[in-house]
Length: 386
Image (cartoon, rainbow, N blue to C red):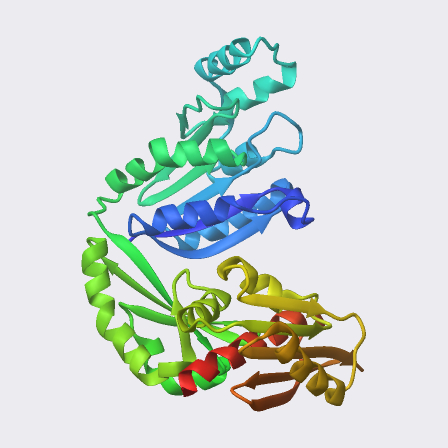
């Protein structure tokens, strides 16, 4: 079973100036041909650090894929770093230089002298022609190890992955047709530790695997199966999915692409109920999340800038029910004090007012998301209770 590591190269990534989308694309592409990815590393444009990072990665993995650092400037050191790893020199390839010249000529441009740097690759490497850019890629084989260096420009990297790298890896590592299929179950109302208490034994499985990912107010359960086909992978994970569903039941609000707001809106639409929302401190997020999923006339909402008392919220809720002719009225007040966020949520439904008051001690930047998820789930539970 081949194991891969990805090394993205570029100081601009470390400074947060650009977002690394290359790793996500490569990871998904490797997943679809059955290659396990064990580690992602980002390193700046420093020759010694890149060299050390690649040496360490090759000690752990069969395959190392790099992106970035193949440009023509002084701060594009990937070629030299790879040469250092294998203790070889960079050699000039006339054929690569001609490809670069042809590329510039096609766009009626003249290359500068430093573009010639891109025609130098490690002596023991094999060039990968790049018809969509000026940076030649290359790969190096040493025993069972392979290092592949790709451009950092996403369009170029994606082209080379799809047109060369994936087929090359299949052939080199004699990969049978195999796929890694993920499935995500979304839960709410229980924290990550509580979910772990319920399904912890399942997290020790090897294939399918089960893992948890916590979000503000909700927890995802990821089930992943590896098999020769998507159909077989899906069949393999079915018993695991069924057991999770049986153990967590109503704490599950959806699976895969289903969002909490979509799940709640579906319940409201199916019931035909009209919902009115009053919000303070949430930037009208509850209303904005539900709005795209509900038809006109079924949803109304107001955002009030001032933080007001619970008694005022109760009065407004009853007034809104009459004014808006609403079947359900939701009120949400989010306030912060001494690094703690406090949320008061009240829901009027069928003449009964339900209310919760909660403190949130997590990162302040997540407080709105947490409060909105809590409010949406309060609506959801009304339908489950009925």
